[in-house]
Image 1 (cartoon, rainbow, N blue to C red):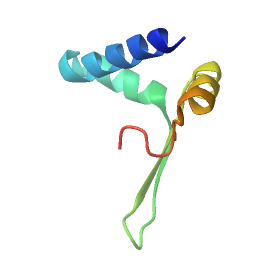
Image 2 (image 1 turned 90 degrees about the vertical axis):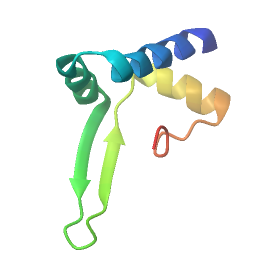
Image 3 (image 1 turned 60 degrees about the horizontal axis):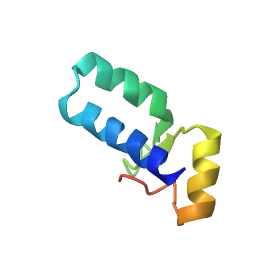
Length: 71
């Protein structure tokens, strides 16, 4: 549900604000599927990973765009 998703996002935000560096690194590794950099333009593409039920619920229910979330 929406409250559950908000809770997860708040926990992620709190971890980034005040968590230990090792915890932050683990969280980033769990959220990033891949990163690529175009050598000519130095543009970086980051593809995020999220649990499928969460993505489907948010995309369908709130107009969420995974490619721009949090950037």
